[in-house]
Length: 98
Image (cartoon, rainbow, N blue to C red; front, side, top):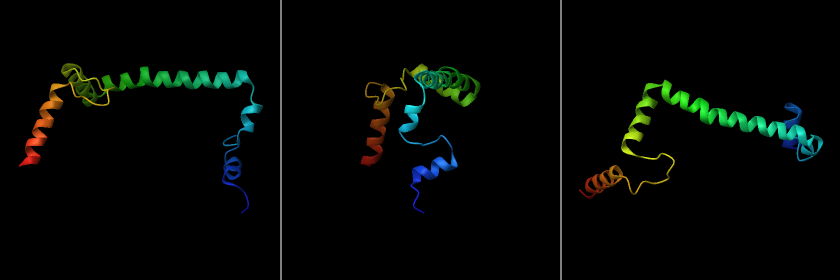
């Protein structure tokens, strides 16, 4: 009962959550290789898997085309300069004011 959660996780999953000492034991080359691998997988998912999924599934393809046609940039947090947002805001204000 006296084992900490970190030690319990280390016993269940060897090499997982071993604390800061585990990084000191790994060589710089091994850590850099792991970083490059994870970075490569991340880029493969973002620039390979996601575009493939967008073009492979009809609903995602239609959404992507709609965004391109209306000029909406999905990476923006808010859309104050898009005409559709203004129209929808006016509609909502009109409905809520009634």
